[in-house]
Length: 286
Image: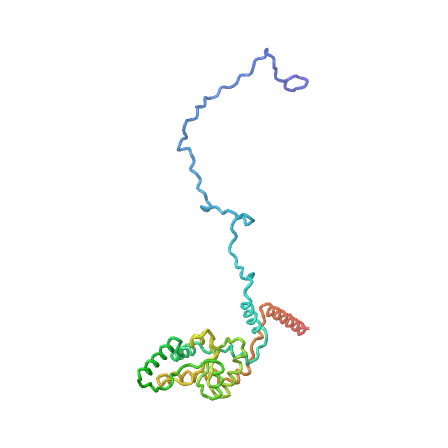
């Protein structure tokens, strides 16, 4: 350092000045050609799941879209739309008692025993009728005596036939389907049965009644008589049916149906009712 500036002199680059000596360190050995297994750290096991979550891309040409319930957007056939709208209208509008009575179907246990009994009195189908007429013709041709037996006891069906049986008081039990369309075909039949004091019942459904008489559908069936072995069972059925329908006529004639509003309408009405109650409570405190 010079006495005036006390600053370090710059390093001399000329050959006259001796170069500073470098310190000699320890010799470092060359690395081994293989890794020491003791020093090698164990491979880290992944802490997450085996299969990592991959974000899906649902854009065009990307991943397959998930299944969705598209029934809301389906253009259903017209008959399905009509029957659904009709069901909603029957719930919303006030339904008169004469139509509402068809929602009151027969009790399940009584219905099971009724259909078991009706099954015994099914009318003959085309094949059975053909075989019977063929056997009768063969007997006539052979000159044998014909069996002069009474007519076999079968279920009576057909609306005009049943209405005549009711007017003549020959029917002992009338079974009406609950889903006849149009309803005007049978809407008068319960009133006729009540007036003539004939036990009647409303069951589900016209397809079940139709199956009993070898048809697609049947609006109503009637029983004129039963065999001696089934009289006790038939009388029990008639008693229980009378209690539910014939003896309950006043209540059936006065009970209106429908008037059930939708979820949104019920929520709005409830909200309005709460507001009215709140206002009334405020006036009571004043």
